[in-house]
Image (cartoon, rainbow, N blue to C red; front, top):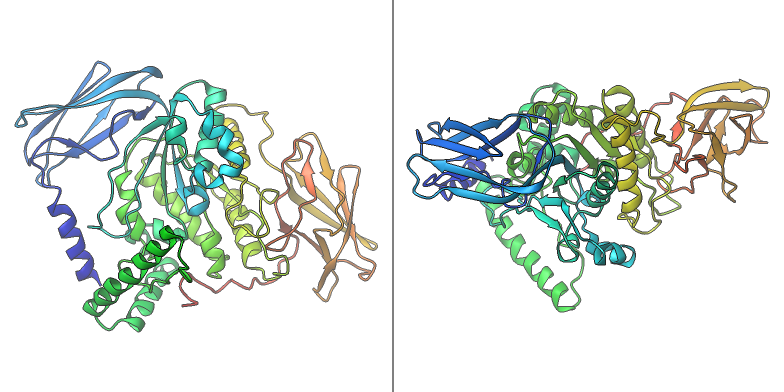
Length: 523
């Protein structure tokens, strides 16, 4: 497997010969640079060539190494709303490279799977007015093109300003986050979208990190086991992949032509499968590292939940956060993320999604400068890509305003359970992050449950009394524990008065179904 990856990498680098001074692909016209931080700028040139980078009165020099790579660091800069040129010159290159209309403001990175990746055009039913009215030259986005393996043909990334023509392709979640920040900060905001649908968190982590602990290394071993179970040799896999692509391209052709296309062809795991561990870190995220950013917004987890690895997510996700902070050279880099929204079917009582949501809550509680928004009121029964991206973006911006931009009194989180007290026939629950008070909405089906000493949960009645939630069930005379929203799909009833929903929770410490499950175990 490693030999075939090496061949791919060799062919990739062969077409990027360092004949002239060339900035890295993330540096293009209309880009946004981070204010108030040292800004790293890098690229390629002939080995040993002196490279000069000029921007906003700063002139920085570097010499390309033996591998042709160079980097300079621009000193901290103030906000600038007027586009200026960013110029690259080489001592052995005839013509300088000049990037136009470069701003200085706030830059964020959006990562995850399809709920981060999906563009405004997909949600036209609700986003069309925002697409039509989009006209903000100070809000800009760069989308890293999908690159499943090194050497695959793909488009070059390009920073885009916000217009009705461009915004249709912007990540909807990232766009609404940036739009809300723009409205509050009134300075340039840039978003880098580096996400791919149907991906596990493990695809966005490096091999170095995955090999750093036995717990994570097991995932690499699982990948090797699955791969070799299907293919005895790399050549056998390559033949399969070529045949798969013929079938897949025909599937796409039928879809485009409006013909019956049948089910989506499923690709087997291997070194060209975009869901492989470490793959997208190598091919996509590496294009962004170590660009200077303010922080990360992240919407992902559905894939890990469906792969029955919800408990292990509390190991994987913090490791990913730590790695990204190291790679972007900001030890306290804000990492803001979305807890999984509700999704059907309504009859699904498996704990896969609830257990992953709990791991997300655990991450917020145990990882410094990490913040989570709750979106259980933004899900859809029959759509894993809910149309609530404006709500998600807005709530992420609330977190950013509170955690990053100094609005310390801003209510930016929904209620989180704090403590339980068992009394005769009832359980009293107290909460934190209640804002100006709790609100309990009347619904026909309660999202609360209680259990007795037998550990069997039953639906419970909930009441709001003196700022506490009182839960009980007629069939449980001595309730011991309570839980709320412990389903993939439920109708949320508990909010604070600012309209932010409570995170699902349980007060028990019962063993979790996914405790010993890892990504790829079910293959």
